[in-house]
Image 1 (cartoon, protein in one colour):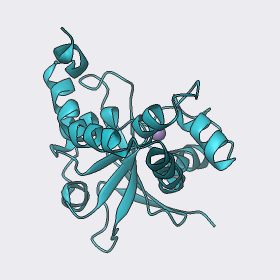
Image 2 (spheres, protein in one colour; image 1 turned 60 degrees about the horizontal axis):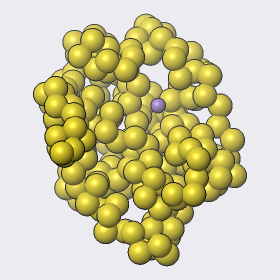
Image 3 (cartoon, protein in one colour; image 1 turned 180 degrees about the horizontal axis):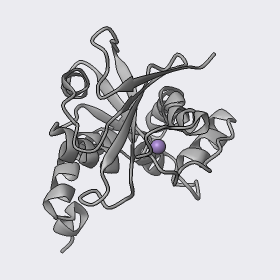
Amino acid sequence: MTQIYFHEGDLPASVHFSGAVAVDTETMGLELHRDRLCLVQLGDGKGNAHIARFKKGCYDAPNLKALLQDASVLKIFQYARFDVAALYLYLGVVCAPVYCTKVASKIARTNAPSHSLKSLCSSLLGVELEKEQQCSDWGADELSEEQLKYAANDVLYLHALKEKLDALLEREGRAAYARACFDFLPHVGMMDIAGFDCCDVLVH
Ligand code: MN
C-alpha cells in the first residue's frame, strides 16, 4: 500500500529513515545552473514516499540536509550523478554515502540494452512504470495528483532494485567495482557543478 506525504520546504523533524533511503529530485530541466531544484522525494522501501517541495530560492531545509549528510544512512538513487549535483548546488550538501542503481546495473548487467529506471523495474521486478509526467512543470504552485504519484514512483522501487542488483554484482564478482564508483559519485557531482567532466579528466 503506497502512502504519499507532501511537505513544504523541508522534511518534518518527526520523519526518520534508518539504514537506507531512496532519493530522487525533480528540477525545472537538465541544466542545473539554469533549472532550479523543485522537489526532493524520499522513500523508505516499505511503500511510504515523502515529497519535499521547494519554492524558488527557499532552500533552507535543515532536516533534509542532515539526512542527506548522515553517514549512517545510505542514499539510493537512480542516476545519482545528476541528483547529487542538484543537491550540492541547491542545498549545499555533499550527499553521502550513496548507491546508484544505474551504475550497479551497468556493471552487473552488461547484457542489458538499457539501464533506465523503467527497464530496471520491468526486467528485475516485473513492474511497468509510466513516465509521462517526466517533463511536467515541477515548479507549478499546485502539483497535480498525477505529478505527485509520478514523483513518488521514482523512489518506491529503489530498495528492491538494490537488492536484485547487489545479488547480481556478487554473483559476477563485481561488487568492489560498484562500491568504488559509489564512493566517487559525490565528488563527481561536485566536479560537474564546478564545470569539470570527471570522465574527461580521466581520459588520456
Ligand atoms: Mn524523478
